[in-house]
Amino acid sequence: MCKSDKIMLWMGGYTGTMYRCPDCGYVGPLVIETTDDIPEEIQKDD
Image (cartoon, rainbow, N blue to C red):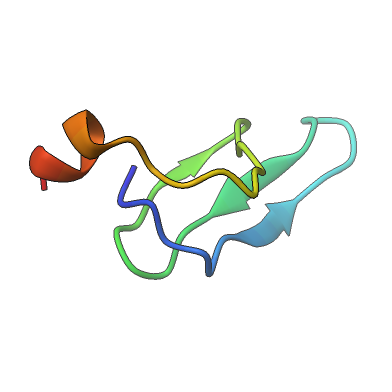
């Protein structure tokens, strides 16, 4: 959500994989990994 690169694996197993962001508190199953730059339209929202 905050575009941080500090996303950590929070838990896994029967519940599936969940990730957590220490910067914004996001907890969820989806993390997008990319080497592309963040588009300007998205950066402006911050």
